[in-house]
Length: 69
Image (cartoon, rainbow, N blue to C red; front, side, top):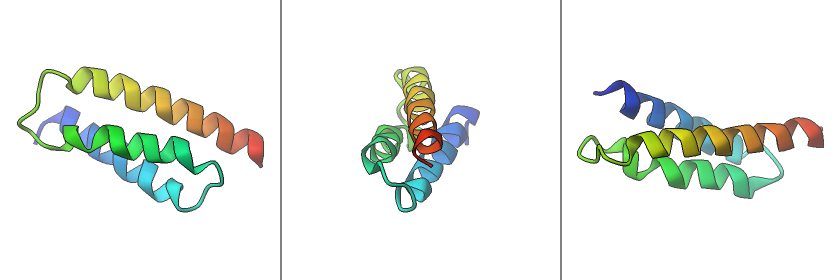
């Protein structure tokens, strides 16, 4: 398993876990949906784009989660 695939798995699972606990659920659903194709090791070309997208989604979701509390 590649390190990029591992990052995609971690971010995707964290997004799914927080998705069930947080109020603005759409951002966390985006995190999970973005990481699904990149959990498969066959896709390599778009993996870096996915990592940056996941980080961006995660920062947006984290910001909203902190400001809502």
